[in-house]
Length: 107
Image (tube, rainbow, N blue to C red; front, side, top):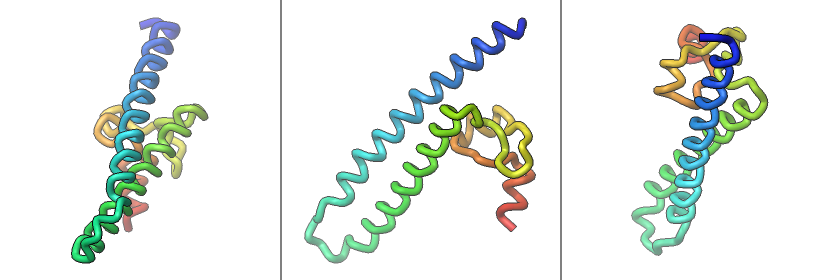
């Protein structure tokens, strides 16, 4: 594949990813609105707080991925600067690290 065709394909892929992540972000926003509505049931407060925290974390991860796409740093490991494999990004679109660096990060 020529360089121009490869760049065009990569731009298309990132555009599709941006659209998908934006939809996910909007869905999380709607979910967060639902979760923060007071149900009046004190028994649900702990579960609801955990769901709100998880939703906010997901939104932050998606927002960070969208910023990396806009800045041109998407798919680049934040630790070593190497490429994050496309397979990893397909599974975890908000990945910030390649697998070896993620393993080091988790230690």
